Amino acid sequence: MLITDYFKKFLNSSQSSGIVLIVCVLISLLVANSSAGAAFQNLLDTKIGTELFHLNYSVSIWINDGLMAIFFLLVGLEIKREIVEGELSSFKSASLPIVAAVGGMVVPGLIYFFFNHGSEYAGGWAIPMATDIAFSLAIISMLGKRAPLSLKIFLAALAIVDDLGAILVIAIFYTDQIEWVYLGLSALMVAILVTFNLLKFTKHIWYIIPGIFLWYFMHHSGIHATIAGVLLALTIPTNISTTEISPLEKMEQKLHLPVNFLIMPIFALANTNILFKEGMVDDLFSNFGYGIIFGLVLGKVIGINLFSYIFIKLKISSLPDQVSWSQMLGAGLLAGIGFTMSIFIALLSFKGHPEIQDEAKFAILIASVISGFAGFSLLKYIGKKREHSED
Image (cartoon, rainbow, N blue to C red; front, side, top):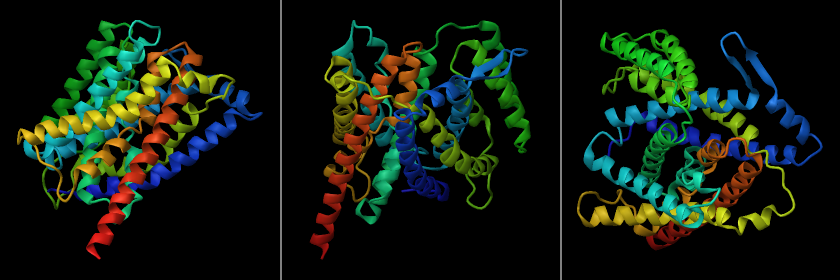
């Protein structure tokens, strides 16, 4: 199995950043439910920017549309590198995490649809489809040697493919109105970036400047601006050399620290500020709550393992090295930690409905805690059992 050095760094950084994210979630919840909660919300609603270029947005929009585009740039770089030289570089190696990711999106979506079709919550069908890379990898990394490296790589590859799927869902289904002039200008920026790639321009500045314009045009086109990050990433030059560091890998190295320890914590602080209200727990026991919680907790593990089992039986894919089906169940549970991406999709699904957004956030939080605890406990138990059998 091909394991790139950058993939190992990705796993290591995910463990540390996941701990930081947990701390930020707790801080955000405490602030939201303290006397500082109203002031914090006012800060998020404060508009900054200029009307000159139609860039006068609230702090929360700058975070969700601006900073998150940088997050998706890093995700796009991860995807491209793994396609070129890593876990997704061949059909055999890529098939299982791809198939598992598809199953982990389809089944949760169907569960949510079952509970909420025809209701005012129907538009949130994509909420339980997402897997949070940072949290899921942070928890599996905490298991140390009790979780095989191949299982960690499988979960990382699955989460990356899952994020790609979430990106496509956002682009296709969560776009309100297309402004074709701006979309055409976005296409022009992509063409320029591809040309720079074909001409083998390697300095980052050749890609960053058109990338900024791409974000601006994409934001005004009606398609969610975070897509610009992925499109930019796919045009950054890379190679399969193990000795020469490519521009893609250099950018990846530079982005890991700010994304994992600044952008994602800021996103968690800004978007987990759930004000606990009377009756919020009761809302969990509604079709809306069931759709999110059952979708993440049960839908993920069922979809991932069902699709994996079918393709392994058809001999198209194979289990990761030294990984059992019980460990695959544990990985499927960890994939039910939807946190960042699920909240992000919930915000897009219910724009202008803060009460529904808060209900969704709370259900996502509960589901993610259940999935994370269950997955960690199962994998820890299996790991201990294996250690004793080897002794």
